[in-house]
Length: 274
Ligand code: SAM
Image (cartoon, rainbow, N blue to C red; front, side):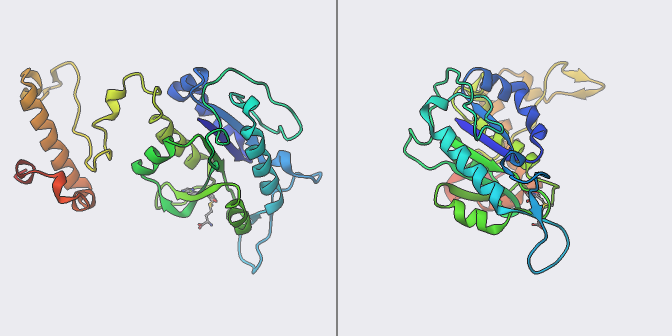
């Protein structure tokens, strides 16, 4: 998968090089390009914002640098020879280095790249979205700041991208970078080959509409708190039943909306006794 992130604070994306996403990049599962929007400005001050039409507080991100940045990123990353380039930052005139990769491009897959615009006014991001996006070959993130990006950029981008306005929660951040990190991590861990043990994805929270059961490790007695006996029993059927019960109890307590949204067939008669 190819991921490009455009931001006026490219350093915010540095954590992508850590841990599992860093390993996935090194292994060629994930090609990531981080771009400074200011590299697509044309004035001496590298201006990316201006006052809002209609008045009001704050500034709005100007359309011109965004349009040029998105055009270049889509075009450059669509070129097969660039598949695998680790960093296209400010590369509108440069030819980025090429590294070996088997990830392919959106153009090769015959689909538009997905343009994800983080926004508190977007659709709530869910595990189902992460799974859907994990099947795409090219994601581009446009990280807004100030009062956001001029709406015309989002309308215009629909020609070349599948555009999605995405919110990571009902609160307001200073910029889209943290939201991009959240979305990238949720998506990347679902790419086949990303997780050392894909089994760890199977029973995770939200995958089937339930939250995960509580987990324990050694020692069995810690400061007088005991691991539930059933987990020490070696009885696999009893452990599976206990875990299922715990998932149902936990979901009922903290996210009853998830339980209410499950189709009837998702719960059997035994589940309904919990
Ligand atoms: N004036 C905007 C509003 O009320 O909808 C908020 C702008 S916010 C200060 C600046 C940027 O942070 C947004 O353009 C967006 O990229 C990002 N952002 C803030 N909260 C977010 C959230 N909950 N989910 C995704 N992105 C968010």
